Image 1 (tube, rainbow, N blue to C red):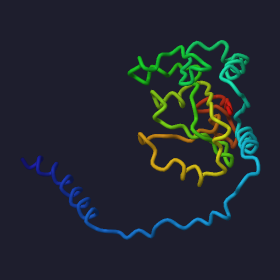
Image 2 (image 1 turned 60 degrees about the horizontal axis):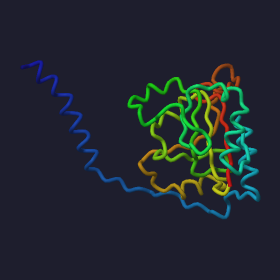
Image 3 (image 1 turned 90 degrees about the vertical axis):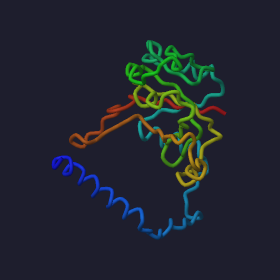
Image 4 (image 1 turned 120 degrees about the vertical axis):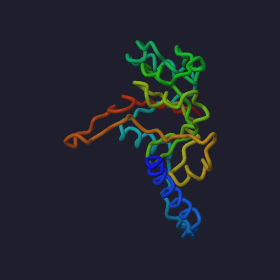
Amino acid sequence: MIAEAFDRQPQRSKQLILDRLRGRAVKSKGLPEIDRSRLVRFDDPVAQFRQTLEFVGGESHMVDTPEQVREILMGIDVFAGAERIASTYPEAIEPTVQLDRIGDPHLLSSLDWTVVRGEFAIAENGAIWIDGGTLPHRVMIFIAQYLAIVVSRSQIVDHMHDAYARIGTPEPGFGVFVSGPSKTADIEQSLVLGAHGCRKLQVFLTP
């Protein structure tokens, strides 16, 4: 009984602290006002996006049809020889992995390629917003060896302020900005691409 009482004591103390915190109202200072007249605007957002994406290690392609997407990918050796491909863009790439039949995302650990749609892109930093509602499994864009994203070039905003204004509250509560490939410079300040995510990012800009 004594041991049980000691075991319960930390829980009661923790609950008391949490209850006091919940009962204390803290007035928010609010977010700062943004002078939108000082935000960057690009004369050619498409060109700026492509330049920024290339700078961070990605590669972009101007295409007009899904057939062109497939043709370019088939010209890449690591795609032509790929066996496990997840695709939510079947107009161009038919998946070899049936995502609707996979219950355990760990089974996607051997993905060669993931091909997905992006909602819009940001010229300032070369990122692309992917809505989680379009992904059967969130991990598919992080775990594949190579990643391809298809996004309309008419859907490119200048900067992150515009991006967040467009997103609002994401549904179903998950989304991610992707720019790549993954990289690290932790070891001897030497930049390594494809360190902990996709080795290469291919972006296809459709009309």
